[in-house]
Amino acid sequence: MQQLLTTALGGLTLGAVYAAFALALCLIWRSTRIVNFAQAPMAMITTYIALVIIDAGHSYWTGFAAALVSGLLLGAVVERVVVRPVEGKAEINAVILTLGLFILIHAVAGIVFGSRYRSFPAPFGVRGLTVGDTPVALTGFGVFTVLAVMVVMGLLVLLFRYTEVGLMMRAAAFNQEVARVLGVKVGRMLTLGWALAALVGSLSGLLIAGGSLVHPAYMDSVVVYGFVAAVLGGLDSPVGSVIGGMLLGLSLSAVSGYLGSELVPLAALVILMAVLLLRPGGLFSHHAERRV
Amino acid sequence: MSPPTTATTERTDHDGGPPALFSITGVSVRFGGVRALSEVSLDVAPRQVLGVIGPNGAGKTTLFNVACGFVRPDSGRLLWKGEELTGLRPHRLASLGIGRTLQGLGLFDRMTVLENVMVGAGRHARTGFASALFGLGRGARDDAALAARARRTLAGLGVERYADRLPGSLPYPVRKRVALARALVGEPELLLLDEPAGGLAGDEMAELGELIRGLTDRMAVMLVEHHMDLVMSVCDDITVLDFGRVIARGGPDEVRRDPAVVAAYLGEEVGGKAGGKAGEGAGERAGREQRGTGE
Image (cartoon, rainbow over all chains, first blue to last red):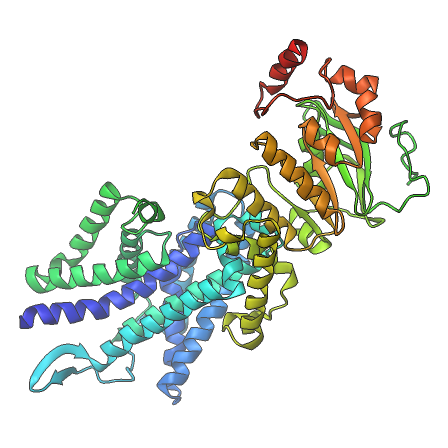
């Protein structure tokens, strides 16, 4: 029982981070049909920005906010400068560019911040909480992680469902040509989409780093898990990628708790293969929704 | 540049009438070695319905695509309220005040009917980027105003009750009206309609005709269509294309009697009973020819 609770809570925290990362991938995929491989190093850079600010004596929250804002800007800049010039050409061009960006940002981070491990603070305790006398495998920071991701999801849902900009972004994502004819400023919507995605990516970077160590490659494994989570939920569906992230976190936590942590990467890849073989559209693809 | 005097001889330049809202002058388009349009000119006056007809392959769709900026003419000019439109691109249409429908309707399948129409009204919303992003104040109010405007437009076309449905679940004539609502909600001064009667049954087409006539108190319409019945009943002026050239222009009665038009339609009784629903597709002209000789 204790073991089950531990893996479930651990999985929830982990899942929230994967969910955020998968959501970032999904936002970009939906609007531009590009898998943004540079998502991880972009989040890494913004986390370093937060670290520099915190190390300079400012509060954790100043650093946190700065990282999110710089994520927003970085996303917009990447879309305008790197992705826009190859828009309308073969999609593989943009994918290769994001891979190049991956390597470039890594190298730049190594030069600017050094490649040693540095510890990143957490705003809440990283010790397990206790309920009565029983310790549970949930840290204060873990609670914050889950809440932060939920709040961001909620804001995004509000944005897409209930605001005009959200409506225009959805129109631009579904059909650029038609949206353009109707006067939607498609280019601006794509920039905004990348900016928001990079913001969500930055959040996942901050949450993974909290109370842990950062170095230029610390986000790289998250690419794999985040990608599996996004595919699991259906790359096209934001809600799907969040649920996919949660499911993946829980499954991997269970694998780690019951079978051994060395099997976690293997399990992630098995899940990826199973999804692609059985439900290539993901568990929550829109076709499935419509069939129900 | 000299005015296109060499264009078409029959061209009736405004005899004291209102100045044209939208003009196409001397437009030629080539695809490889094929001349899709040669020296085509037409004028759409304010609050007028101009029909463009012609057999399949006459260049109607190409002309439509020139008018909305999808195809750039090799020569010739487009004028909007007397000013030349250079390098017109589709995304500029809405801000100029030109609305259009698409032949494939192009509705967003995963957005409700209301949301589809709201996208078309976007040019009337003046929401600041940041305020809309955070859903504050004006952003939210504008959103409500936008939804109200979209609902009114749907109501005007009699399809308001479908506002919260997804387009994919609706019958084709309803979806057509939704697409039309989306083009109208931006209150364009000129509406470009590409084959609006395609896929409609006889009585639905009559309703469509009334609907188009009803628009003329607010806007001009350029109607590209091969259904004679519809064109003859709603258009003030008609331009007839064949093999990429203008072969006739004038009012419905004039055009109906024009020998060149009769010849182009190979004996089909122009403006007569088109005989039910014509299909769309490559073999259509042949089909019509057979029908024509049979009647």
